[in-house]
Length: 149
Image (tube, rainbow, N blue to C red; front, side):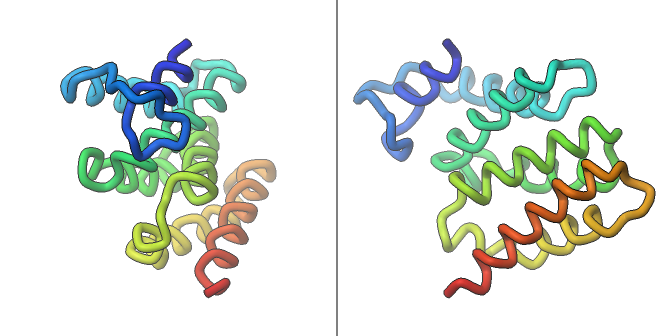
């Protein structure tokens, strides 16, 4: 339900936009922060975190960085410092963001910081192997996107 609401009524910048903005800025701020918290939470089920991650990336495609300047710094902080579940959630959001949410200009503006944090997660022996693998996947996506042009 929330996914449909965001996709159809968030912003004309989202491909699935239905033609009418359904939330004011205060509500959007609450939704952004709540979804990011769910996507990177320890206590939520994996499917719930994954769905929240997808919606966060859709919102970010229209709101980052102007209306959501804290998104990337939050993700880049959680990856090395969060619990394994939080780090995994942050990497998932970051992967969705790189795949669908960032324009080329946005990506190239943050690529160096993004690649460093993801690379460090991918090679950190203290991280779980699945977390390191996810970090490696995101690093590959970032590297290919950066050098594809």
